[in-house]
Image 1: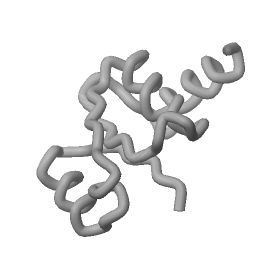
Image 2: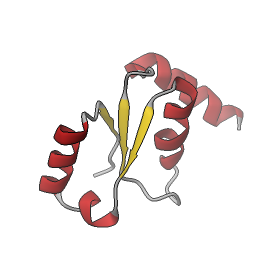
Image 3: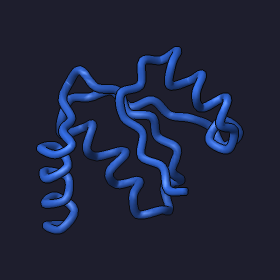
Image 4: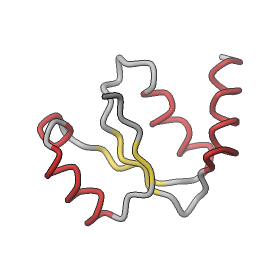
Length: 78
């Protein structure tokens, strides 16, 4: 748990996240980076926006969601 907390606190500083941010989650819960998408906003007071599988796989739908929902962060593994 220490390693995850250390990682989250480091990401909170750089690139930086605060209560005004919104993160779009596109990672399944079974993937390790889901910890970043779920816990970082919680420790910062930021907003989490969940996406479904169909939207996560379609670049146009993702773009529209980012634009329409005012998303400021998105972490995606290519």
